[in-house]
Each structure stands twice: as structure tokens, then as C-alpha cells.
Length: 441
Image (cartoon, rainbow, N blue to C red; front, top):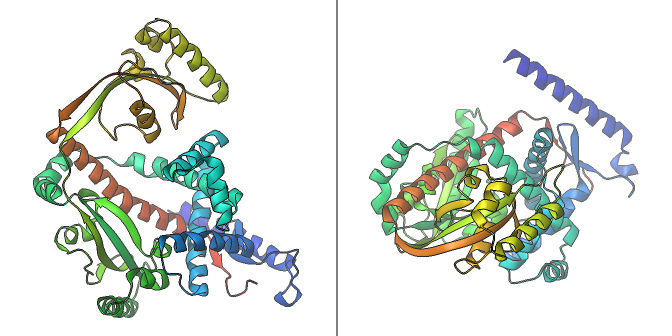
């Protein structure tokens, strides 16, 4: 513990020295020139400058307008965007420390997927963004950073989450019937934050502010507008929209309310260590079918690395596909060539797969195939694949599906809570100095 404090002190001393040097090198506001950029925040031994903040605000504004989210006052918007940039910078610094990156091939695949979900080609996506005033290169870099932070959160938090069969049993015993009646809810959220070691007076001030906001909302104020202007939460710029949650994945703070609140209802302020939360139940979905279409499939995987480039993996799989189409046995080739050692021993057999069992890229390619069809090579985060569909069936998997849903719901619930705690730890361990008041805009 003492060593950690010494390391942190050294880190802060170094960051302060960097800040002092930068302050000495930069001219005073009265002498500012267009050649130098104002610093709006220092994050460890890195800085965020005014042009970055302006660019990010310019990126956020069209997205807010497209979603119909009311835009808060400019000063509030800058503060919200800067807070997001600081958290992003901390995560990117951590990703660099542990060697996580997103190469151009993965980035292009992600951009192509974004375009396809919007019914566009990649070129059309670029034209649409630029017509909306969003620079494509900035959007591209933001997407790369989102991929990196998502991988970081998976490695540092999500992969460490364990769900036991006993947890699944307890979950189903308590909530299975409710899950069937109400399968998903869409939530909106406002946070009135309190410091980590808040005094009674600070807590009371926050409580009164939260109660005032609830009264305002129940009086007819637009929730998205109030959230964008007054929430301290990470989704403030999205109008407090947390999106859809399966019932078991609803954050534990509001898990009971999610079953009882009516559509459009506003909760009383809910206390947690981070502050007071106000929840609106924006929408509800009912129960879905229990019969699912399962696919029996097998695949061959070639991983890329320092010795195997993407082009090499694709070429090898093209050759293997031609051999399979020419009559050679898929299972024999999978045993000899697949880098997925677990399935290779079974001739590449993945067993029966239900929707959601594989990553979207794999599931999408598999869905295109008729039984006995063999795909062309395609890429996922795990590498390059070819897949063959052996057969399909409609299966009543109520028990299996319920257990899988419960397992996923518990994992998502834990992930939401653990990621928030992890982000708070990253921030608490960092040297951060905000200079919005001094910056030139």
C-alpha cells in the first residue's frame, strides 16, 4: 500500500512538472497565437487541448440532433464532453500499457458493419457523415478508439466475471416468471453525483437537487432535455438514454422498479455510493417465442499474427475451400489446418448453435448458407474463418434458453457495475487537472 502511494506521488509529481513546463512554454492568453493550442485538461503525462474538445463537441452535436436529444447550454456541453474525453484518454493510456490496439483490417470491418446497419456502403457512409458536418477521418479515429476501449474493458473487467450455476438457479427461482411477462425495458437516467467521501451537508445538497429535478420532471419537463443539461451521468449527452435491458440485466439499483414501474413513470431519487439516481421507464417489451432455429456448423480458423498476415490467412482458406468443394473431407482438413484447437479435434464441429451463441460476424455469414454450403473466407475478432452449415432445426429450448438468458443477464448486470467501479478507480489513480476556465475557445 505504501509503495502504491509512493508510485502515485511520483506519477503526480511528474505530471505536475510536465504541466509546469507546458505552462511556461505556452504564452499567456493575451499573447496567444494560432500556432499554439490551449490546454483544457492534463491527464497523467498527456494533455487534452481546446481543438480536440472543439472537434469532439462538433462530432457530438449532429449525433444529439439526429437522436432528437435537446442540446444543453454550450458551457455544460463542453464540460460533459471533456469528462468523456478524460475517461477515454485514461482508457487509451491503459490500453497502450497492456498492448491492446485495433488494426486497420478490424477497423475497416467495424466501419463496414456500421454502414451496413444503416443500409449504406462505406463510401455512402462517408458522404453522409461529411454532409452532416462530421469529418470522416475523425469518425474513423473515434471508432478505432471505441474498439480499443471495448477490448480493454473486456480484458480487464468482463473476462474476469464469473457466473456460477447456483447464481443462475437463484436468479431463475426469483425472477424467471417475471422475465417471461416483461422481457426488456428501456431506461433513462439522471445522476446527481456526490464526492466519494461526501460530507452529510454535501449529501443533503445533492438529495435536495435530485428531489427538485424529480418534481420538475413530474411537472412535465422533458426528461432528455433535463438529463442533457443537469445529469452527471456518462449518458447525459444521449439524453440519459441507457438503452434496452433484458430484465435480468437491469442494474441492481433499479431491478425491482423495472418490474413495477409503468411506462413513462419517473422514480423517486435512489441513493448509491456515486450519488442520487433518477430513473424513467421509457418503454417495455413483452415475452418472445421459446422456439429457436439452431444451426449445426463446423469451421476452420486461421489466426493472424506477426508471421501470418490477413492476406495469407485469406489465401490459405480460399485454397482449403476449393479443396472442400472439390470433394475433400471438411473434417480432415479442419483437423490438419484449423487454429481452433478445441473444435479441430472434432473436425471443426461447433455443435448446435442458437442465435447469439457466436459473434455477429460469424452468425451473419452462417445465416447466408444453405445446409452443406461452405462460406468464403471472412474475418472476426478471432481471425479468419470458413464455415459450413451441416443442418438446421427448430428447437423448443425453453429450459436451456432460460438458463442461458439468466447467465448472460447476470454477467451483464455484473459488467455494468464493475465497469463503473473500474472507471472510477482509473480516475482516482490518475493525475487530472481541468483548465476549462483558462482555455481559449
